[in-house]
Length: 279
Image (cartoon, rainbow, N blue to C red; front, top):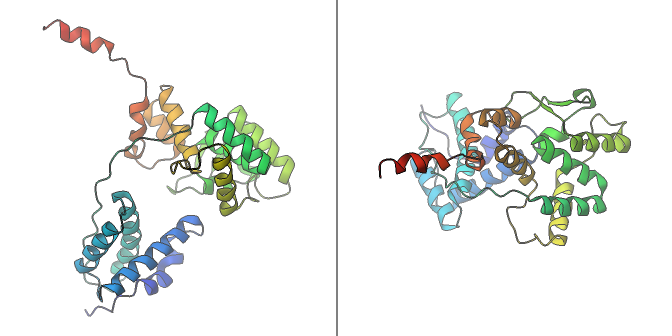
């Protein structure tokens, strides 16, 4: 079976709409594929094989990309190439193994940081403050909250039907989340959902302005997704079982949730007393 010359942009045009839902993540992946095609062209790579992936790894390393960033880009490439392979257009897949990633410190907001950020977001536009309160109280992703519809909400729970994992989930609502929804209903009750009027790019712009005003402008980890980390970290610190946190966040596998486990309170004092018996 003959292989066609490499053209990742063409593969994106063939499979992009099929494999990725519209939104911010899809736009990021499209940018990654364009970057990888540029690397292939620059180094004269004309076919799909290990020469392609080795060249990409080396080029991204030289640019200073971390393992996690390289893995995200390779994951997009893998998704395209696997579809191309399954359709019978290439004989075999190249080496697409991921790099090991360091388990770095999980950044989450303190109560004081959260209070300051939300106050500024309210001042910019109350809808951004409402959304942030809802995200930190439910652990939901922006896309999940943005697609939420009024029939999916009642006085006690919110049900997310469109999720990253592909499985719907319902979460109980805190008083803060209920207040955010009540405020949203007053603002845009005629819309299909509480946050349908919020564009992600506008939210990010408001978030960056709030960061600057709160003195957090240089902290690269304080991005909107930190609200989800903050929710998960608070659950773990309060002693909630790790499997319950997994279900609450909608993680497909427990391994995705385990990174919060070390935050859980531990009663290790008895360990020392047991060991002392043998001393």
